[in-house]
Length: 421
Image (cartoon, rainbow, N blue to C red; front, side, top):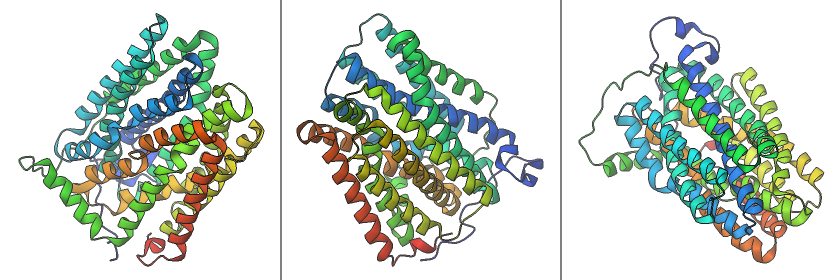
């Protein structure tokens, strides 16, 4: 089935915004972009700091690191799709503000516990679950706002800018958090996370969000969820895209963003916090590719580009498992970032340009679920496996599996994913 070109109709505030040539010229998108960038810096720094604290602050194992990442990410499985329904029914700004207040409570709690030396492993698990719940609710709401305040012609400009914000978060989040930790200990790193949440809350105050044109909130949530599943089922390219995103979330994401820290400690004999340097070059690679996509405006065969990027990501992750020195990981991080820039821009842009506005909240929730919903469980599994066979072999096999799946999908594409524009 060919997806209609006008499937997504943006609802923009009145005025001269429609005449803008770049999304950043839109005042409301500027505010949302600052909020999203602060959130993504927080998300990358948070995962890094908590894993660092567990591995080195509490001197726990790779399996315990996996348990914390599981607690941080498992709420995505239970809350994200419901958050998408809420975003299609209720006031999105209020939902987003509430989710960030919950995040503030969790980060402030970790700061206080670390400052008074009361941060036991159990408390870290509890606060991680609360923070993950806030992320699970806020993520889909934040992403569903983009097509509501940006014209369809500028969606890929907005996606490119968002990807650059994600790049900044990958480069600066772990590095700045490590710097704060070096200066003021782990409580300094947690204080940095609190500051990021406060910045995000401040820019939400003046943000103007259009109301839903029509809302049906009397029917059960399961009815709304069934509707989005039927829509995906009836669109073969999207069905394949969802499957591939899920598999990448099972392999590339947990292996490169989580297990890599344990690999730095086990294979190189270094502080796990040194993984920040590889994450920084990864972010630089995303920046280079995202800037290219943004300047280009649009690429033909976006689905094909997405699958190629997934192949590159799988190959790089497999090579990461063979590294024996930090400098090798740093170089591979850059190439991972190049593939990640295409992967992020193409996947998110396809979701936002081809989804009807009335389904946008639920569709972006599905996007978030496929990207991160399976990651916590897989991080937990990889942690236990790595404790027994080593981080290197675990990373290599997982990356190789992703490469093979993406290659088979590319060579046997019959759903039309390669031709999606």
